[in-house]
Amino acid sequence: MAEIIKIALLGIAGVLFAIQFRQQRPEYALLIGFALSILVFSFVCRMAGSLLEEFRGLQQYLGDSKGYLGILMKVVGITYLCEFSAGICKDAGFSSVSDQLEILGKLSVLFAGLPILLSVIRQIYSMM
View 1 (spheres, rainbow, N blue to C red):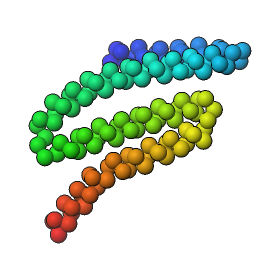
View 2 (view 1 turned 180 degrees about the horizontal axis):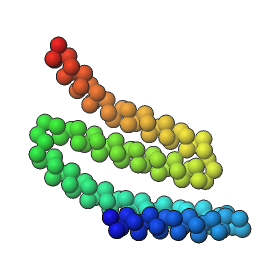
View 3 (view 1 turned 135 degrees about the vertical axis):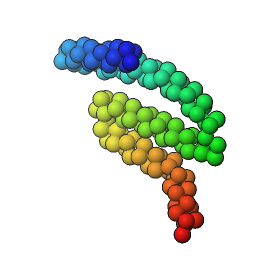
View 4 (view 1 turned 90 degrees about the vertical axis):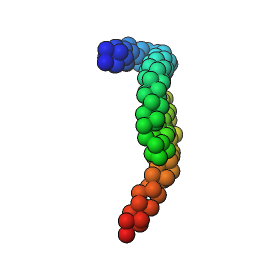
């Protein structure tokens, strides 16, 4: 929890620092934002590694439902990657590319979740 607070405060401080440069040197503000994004992304990757280890331990207890956990991890990864990429594009002034990345993320999550939807439909039909 303390690490999360440190990263959040670092992000706020970095944004305030970038705001100072925005008027005179906008390219520095963009670089500061990019550096902050890399720092936060590296922190998230470390947390994701720990989370992945926990999920691997959980998979041993699930039996037939192992595939659902993999789909969940894939959906979380797709969502984070697309939101992160869209945010960078939006900050750089490419809002149309940002919007397209968000749509790509939503469609990818839909396609990744289709096996779960099909499984639910099969379960409903088997009860009828």
